[in-house]
Amino acid sequence: MLVSAALQGVRLDLQGIGNPYYAATVRSMLEGWPTFFFASFDPAGFVAVDKPPLGFWVQALSAKLLGYKGVALLLPQVLATVGSVVLLWWLVRRPFGPAAGMLAALALALTPIAVATGRTTTIDSLLVLILLGAAWALLRAIERADLRWLLLSALLIGLGFNVKMLQAYLIVPAWGVTYLVASRSHLPHRVGHLAAATAVLLVVSFSWATVVQMTPPERRPYVGSSSSNSPFDLAFGYNGLQRLLPASITDAAIEDAGGTAPPSPGAILGAFGAVETGERGPLRLFNASLAAQIAWLLPLALVSFVVAWWQEPGVLRPPFSARRAALLVWGGWLLTAAAFFSV
Image (cartoon, rainbow, N blue to C red):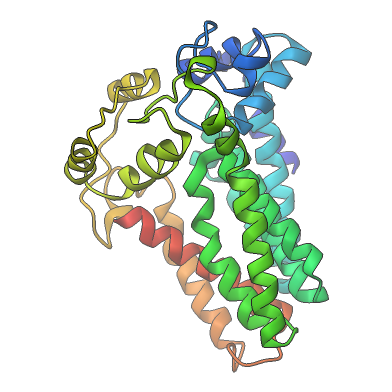
């Protein structure tokens, strides 16, 4: 924790305001309740930011307390990164021992891209903390055979959706499969529990979007980067299928629907800083642009996963130990994310 705090906090005042698009959004959100709730990019409430509001609500509250300045905008991400290091240490330490927990925490604390992400106004570090909390609640639900912990896990994933939308759902396949096969409850109960948790997940996920959708367009900002002024379009379009499918397909779909997709200020700014991420395919994460960020750790992670898997004979047969459940969560989450970011 101290290593992470030192790396995150050193000379933080020299970082400025971070991403100017997000910093301008937070500044506008301080103007009043409507711009705050709808995460308006401009003080007049003309167009909203191209992300859901939760991460920027946190930044705005920090700026309200500390004053609008770079450190106030960056502090929530710094604290989220340090919190993620501590939580990851705890999550890995319990089933795999103190040495494994320390290595996992150090890997997160020292990975350059994790340090860099925590020292900017992008909101990925908050999403990581929330999803690690969801993983913790899931493992507690399995360990204690308690539906309440599973519902808490679903609630946290729903909050993650209100940070970066569908990116939060990358944990969902591992979340559902792990509970279904590792829970000590009878199979009908497991299915019922997952159904209830899924309902909580969806209600929390789409709560803000539903309020925005029900608000008359003339009383709120235009939903930035959407083609139809709809937060659902933003979730499943710009922040959904457009992140997965080639641009030619999604652009054609917008045209067929008779809509237009006006660029948001974030899209315009992002175009100047765009970095080529390589051709789609199984080795995409290992190309020259991405390998130095995190892919260098993937071979070790995969080998460690295979070794740990083989050390647990009958890993898919009950009863499930804490190690088995943890392997399913971490392994399933890794494979889902790797597959998504490779296509």
